[in-house]
Image 1 (cartoon, helix red, strand yellow):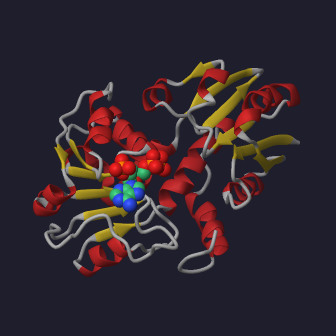
Image 2 (cartoon, rainbow, N blue to C red; image 1 turned 45 degrees about the vertical axis):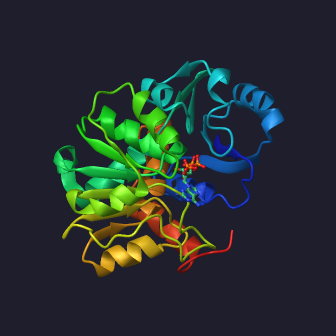
Length: 281
Ligand code: ATR
């Protein structure tokens, strides 16, 4: 039996084992995916342990996505640019780091926007780790223009300036973004605002939302944030963070096994586990 897992701190509520084990079963692969609670100070030993124990693949989550990088043998160029790794492949003793977070998001967005996202006007709300993964991945896949709004301008400007992929990008304050919202076809919400238990909060007012636009929020707890609820009421096409979560997992699974697992099976099992509008975690 092959062993896979996820390392993080905290890790108790991770839904990755459920998702990956269902995909292993579905595809007839003799493997088990488990949670490893790894504290910061034990990260180097944990990574050595992957090799020593012959663990085939590992997901990396908060707070280790950046610190794990110098401990690996090779880093994929996109993960290098993003500055974070969420997937490790153990290739016969060589540990290779990838980032599937942004790619998972893009895969999910394609379900709504089709392949035409390259020509859409896109606004990202936020400039943290998730925003960076999405911004860089969209840029690396040929999207030519992405604007960014964030509470802290410096953080957004740094993210934009250090992007190694060519694109046009303008920073807007949250107030400015509210005023020109009608200019965007796709709005991507990457901050933690609206996440359980602060479910009534929203990062910006969407009075000027463009008719027929897409609003995608990376939060999946609750499944419908206040922002998504308002956007839906205004006729937007909305998406919660479940697709991103499932697709980043599916892409890790593909790196490990060569098989891209069925999105619907993984998504359903996570939905079952979430069991409603929001969960206390
Ligand atoms: P992650 O790595 O998960 O994306 P993060 O690095 O903490 O998380 O980034 C969180 C994002 O949410 C940032 O864009 C942050 O804005 P700042 O750069 O101004 O800190 C945003 N954010 C979090 N809480 C916020 C709040 N109460 N109001 C406005 N923005 C908030």
